[in-house]
Image (cartoon, rainbow, N blue to C red):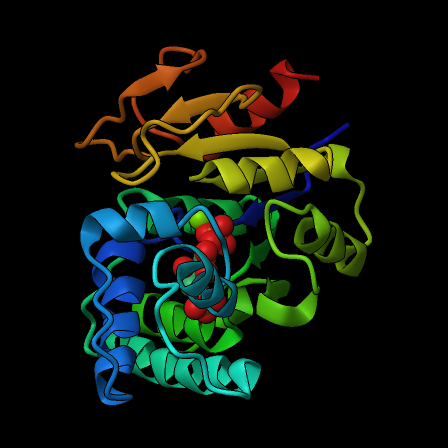
Length: 254
Ligand code: XBP
Ligand code: MG
C-alpha cells in the first residue's frame, strides 16, 4: 500500500529531551516541593523503563524510594508534583535549550512538500509537545501535524499500542499506509503493537535497546553534510534519511 503518513514519537526521536530536559525538570519540581529526591543521569536511565511522568514517579517510589513516607492523597500529590515538572520543562523549552535532532527539520519539510500527512504519537504531556514544536518550528509548528496524540488521551501509555491506534483512527488510515519513527524499545513495542513499520533513531539512553523487527536502526536521521551511521538494516546506499529512503523502507518491508 502507498505511504500516506508519517507518525512521530517526540521524546528522543524529534529531540533529545530526556537527560537534559525532562530529568532536569523532575529534579527542579522535587526541589521546589522540598523533597530531597535527585534523579541522576544513571538512575534516570532505569526510570525510563516506565513511560509517562506520573507513572515514572510512582515507579520510583515503589522501587527506588520505598522509605518515603507517602502522603494520604498520593495520587493528588503526584499530579501536583507532575504539574510543577511540566511547568519547569516548558520553561526550559522556552529558553530554546532543546533543539531538534539532526535531520528532523529537513525531513519534516520534505514530507510536507511531498504531500505526506504528519502526526505525533507520544506519551508526553500535550503542553510539552506544543512547547517543543513552537520553540523549534515556530508558532505555526503545531499546525504541521494533523493529529497530536499525546499524554493521557489514552489511558494505557507505551509500550501499549493505543496512542498509535488512536492517531490512525483520527486520520482514518490503516497501519499499512503509515510508518512510525521511534527511539526506544517501549516505543517500538507500541508501534509494532499497532502493526506499524518502524524506523529507529537511537540516542544515548536507548543504544542498547532491542529493536528487532525495525525496518532500519540509525544513530540519527543524518544530514547531507552529517551522514548517519546504520546500526542495522539496509540504507540503499544513502547517507541520510530523506523521503525517498523512507518510501523505499516502507515498500521493501511489504
Ligand atoms: C516519553 C516519556 C515521557 C517523558 C515525560 O516516552 O516517557 O514520560 O519522559 O513526559 P516516548 P511527561 O518518547 O516513548 O513517548 O512527564 O509529560 O509524562
Ligand atoms: Mg521516545
